[in-house]
Length: 578
Ligand SMILES: *[C@@H]1O[C@H](CO)[C@@H](O)[C@H](O)[C@H]1NC(C)=O
Ligand SMILES: *[C@@H]1O[C@H](CO)[C@@H](O)[C@H](O)[C@H]1NC(C)=O
Image (cartoon, rainbow, N blue to C red; front, side, top):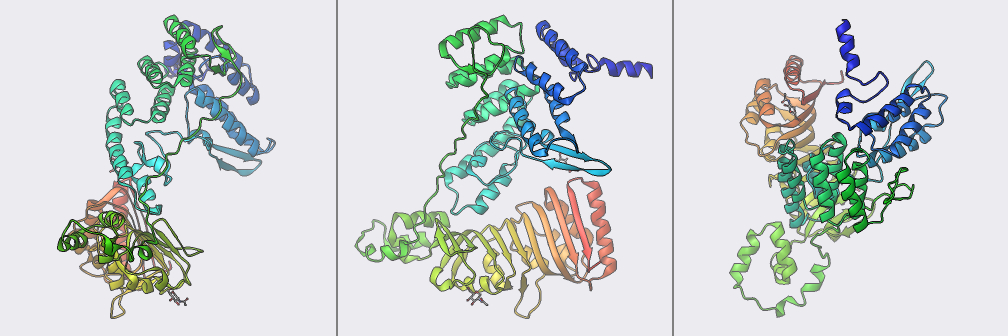
């Protein structure tokens, strides 16, 4: 027992220091000395404001390890009723996070929570965005937003970002954007695989050809290991080569405020300052060749590349009829017709914009996104309709290629548009309150490319007024990843039918509300789930009240066992109104 206590104590340099002994032991003598002084000061402090001020003062002179910043946030993180308003604390945390970022630490989650403790009441927890004015291009941990910037560099959430991007776009993503995305997906895997080899890892970062990406990832990695001298040197070389002189000088100044005894580097720093400086620095202990400004570093500007898209000219129909007769063609008629018949939407777009003749022969205006909204308008390749719009004015033999989003209470809205459509290749179909025949649904999904089908509060029935069997719908969805439908039938064969189907994509989410019909083979259904599960799978099944209760109970047990065997599976099961 005693030896255990000694062991525990030994892993810290003294009871008050947040630093691990291993880290401390590797520091140079001069840095050890200043850390000792800081720890001594902190040891006699009780007040958290005092502690924070002492750490901030230290951080104006020396590169400051994450453990000390954690202390600033820990203290800020626990408020009691007598504390000033949380708003002020939020601001203080943001300021602290900004300083910590200069010291190469970036903690998106850990530092973003704080709780308010109240007398005799449960604490309230707050979450706020510490870095709202900064877009940090990290390989790991990204939240998703549908911008082109977020799919232009490698990270762990690329596929989801791309799906969002594709889903909300007002026109087909350009080939350039798609090519970049595919390359970044490959690079992500390579970079992850090379993480243990800093040279290889750094070389792969350069392949992204994005200076901000290199800066952000290298700095966050240095923040996790100040002792990685190889990486410091690679980074300094990179900054010089790319004429990033301000960052170069900053990086030197940070290095020399940690490796206090590295006089060779200090000499190089001085020479480069003479060559590329003067550049303002926020430190309070400047060398005579450094320039002090004491001013906080301004947030660096975020550059957003303009989007490259193929514009769709919605007036194309009205303009070209008068002119196309006078054009002459080098291709004989039948070849042109053959091309038209076999062209996919991307080729059609190009044919239409290269020559109006094609549009006459195949007058199918292309609409990437068809949606409902508060006003009727065309924007790029997107058509927004209000629910009272007369579709005859806006749609004629229209080719829907990307996305359909119909959220209106008029239950016949979509059904009345379908006769005005030439074809549908939409990958994202999200509809609500619509009544469709099975033939109409087939028209929308039979191309097989649907990734996300969301049909909430919709009724889909066949010619006899019956609901449709699950497997009959799934047969048209080989690429489905997200499925949400209401009122679907199952039968004795459903489990087998599903487990025998071939899918190209993996399923992430499956919700069926109002399941009716006859019990199926639960084990076959499980087989289907196991074979087709994406990295994670969420399932939500609500059976109708009349459904066989013993079956639902048994099905629930089988899913429950599956969930226990795999932490990436979750489900929710409901029978009737219970
Ligand atoms: C429903 O929408 C269709 C298509 O826009 C329209 O023709 C019909 O009049 C609408 N019905 C009602 C009740 O608004
Ligand atoms: C769950 O997913 C993670 C990756 O997200 C994977 O490493 C792990 O092996 C998965 N667990 C199971 C039981 O498949």
